[in-house]
Amino acid sequence: MIEASKLSEQDMVTARVFRSNRGDLEAKEWVAERAYTAGLRLATFSLGDPNLAQDVGQEVAIRVLRGLPKLRDADRFDAWTYRICAAEIKRAAKKRKRHDWHPYEDVEHELQVEATFPQSLGERDWLIQALAQLSERQRLVLGLHFVYGLNDKEIAAAIRSRRGTVRSLLSRGLARLREQAEADESKGGRETAVGQITKQEAIR
Amino acid sequence: MRRDSVEGALRKHAEGIEHMRPDRERIRAAMAVAASRGTAAGRRWTPLATALACLVLGGAVATAAMGLLDPALESFLHGGKTPGRQLSGKAVPSWLQPAPNYSAPDEVSVVAASGEERLYAYRQRGWICFDYGHHAGECRKPREWRSDLEKAPWVLRGPLGRSVWFGLVDASVALVRVEYREGGTTDVTVHNGGFVLDADRTRGPQRLVALDASGSELISAPVVYPSR
Image (cartoon, rainbow over all chains, first blue to last red; front, side):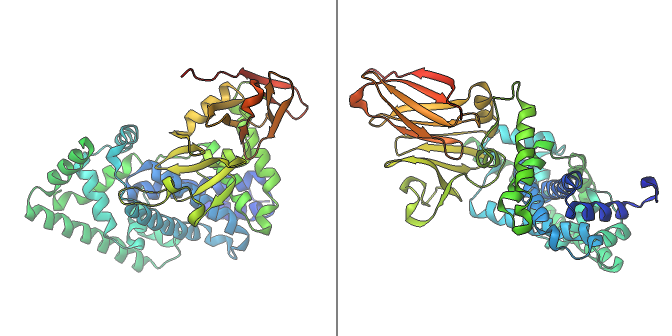
């Protein structure tokens, strides 16, 4: 028998997916937690709203739990979960846009956002808006790189993609953000303007 | 934002996120919702997931009898679907229909009903809302509802309209009864963790009582009509 400590993380994931499908409640809970955490972190990174990210996390966990019996290759669990995360984040962003959501209406919510993010209001707003301009896959790869601290090789393994593709997604995503920053910088004071507008809206 | 500081800003942005974890209660609520929405395979998990959700709630309260909620209500408080019968189109009350400058709720359901009176449930921007027929409504944070249901087996609102009471109850309550001054009672059963009790005012409602499945009294309240 192989000792648990000698199993790779991927083996552990695969084993738990199998066990979960066989009805092991502990494994099922582990699967739900892994999916929820991925959704929560990646959504907070992309959307900048911890409350909305909780909804995404929950929806990801539900979709994963429901779809797990149909997952043919347990090795692909993480890649599959990340794809669901990306889709749910996109859906949440659309829904937020449709409802004309504004984070500064709710003081309690805003305090929670402030507690989650260390950077300034303007910087955070700028990032969220800039990240929204990227493709789903670019955002996912950036999230895995910055939130999970994975390098291109690890991301490629996690999302079952080629290393070259991941490198290209990372570098193009970053390049696009830099271009955006440069454009805003040349316009002058965009960062401040964003912060001022949103604060004024909040006062109204 | 400076061009050369983009990576730094992304790192800073990710700092607070990398240690975020959902709490156990939320995970188990997701499991319960997945089981209730599930496919044939998922439905096999329903009894286990429901038991789990009950266990979670049981751990959160001081006594075993208080604080356990109906699974549908529990799931709703944790971000799941609205409890009861979902409404669509014209069945949605007019004040919850989409209108300019108003973000209508995605889902509206009827938790419980009696005659023409309805207890509606919906979610709006993270708030959990209940409308008591066309009389009144209130939106509060999920933890506020939960906290009230941990303190007492029911959250009672009324009398509204002719003589109607609306309420949410924990899982220990099976029946809500109104006792009349002239004798006799009217009983209503609990649906999806809520009830609507349309009492006969002409008989002089005197006392409201919540009963468990064995008929034991859990809590009661005298009927007091607001003075005009």
